[in-house]
Length: 262
Image: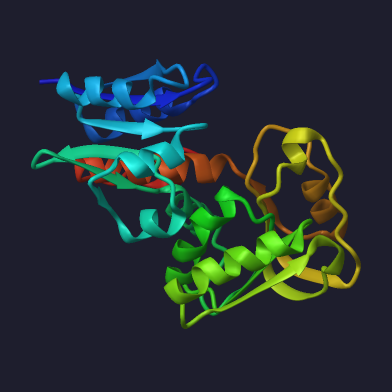
């Protein structure tokens, strides 16, 4: 019987999840159907409930519903608890389970580039939900020091306070975007600058070996500056594919190779 999957969001037309999951299914021989599901802002919980009542096998969650999905779950993975947001849902033994695969998607994308995270020092620009969701998987992959830089310093400091107990063996620090300096193995842009067209300035006092832009398909001053420095760089399509593969493997018990799809 064909397994039924969906991605829910508002808006939803921009989602590339159906094409990705159908590509994974073709590669692995899984019989599935995956559709986009629009939900009005006041209908999210009802829409999820209806989907699973009608034998839905699994659901991805995109903006603006990830935090509400987190609150809806009966069971959460460790990384979902830390992220306080859920992008992957499934039912098991009558309970709604939730996970957050974004961070593992980022880690897998970085590994696919053959960039090492073992014993790494990482700077993350931005202190929003995207950053919260990737800290734990980066630490699990070997990061030893992570600095979170944000325009509003107090927000970065709050995120460090929230997460430090979850990653006790890693040094977590906060700084302002106007205080960027030092040497890092990797800089990750998790700000909305590339989405809004804003310019992000990386000072000469900041040195790094690799640059990863979480957004994709948009002009990025962050990527432009990495190019000017001759630093290897990548944008977030690999992360998008990686998080989708992680969700696919949770639901279907088989994990396609990321390098086959980027």
